[in-house]
Length: 81
Image 1 (spheres, rainbow, N blue to C red):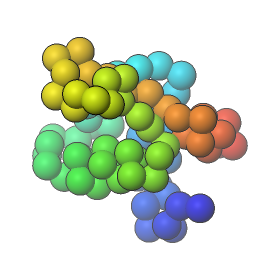
Image 2: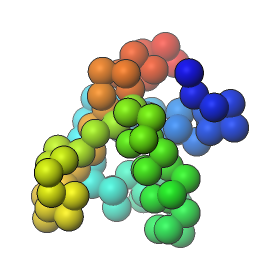
Image 3: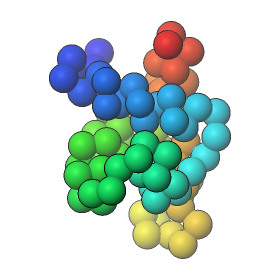
């Protein structure tokens, strides 16, 4: 269960990803956020911690082709919307 105050932000991120894969920059742009630090701490890192999204290259977080996709948990959350 997600914390209520984060529901809306994570819901936006999950809807943004859908069944596709995007880089962190692409997700940030799709969400219309300009502050990279805020995006990473409030959206990306929280979604990773809550296991709603996962990186394509978990062993190398700074991989040049790093993208993110929904986990099974994220897909279930997405389908409920």
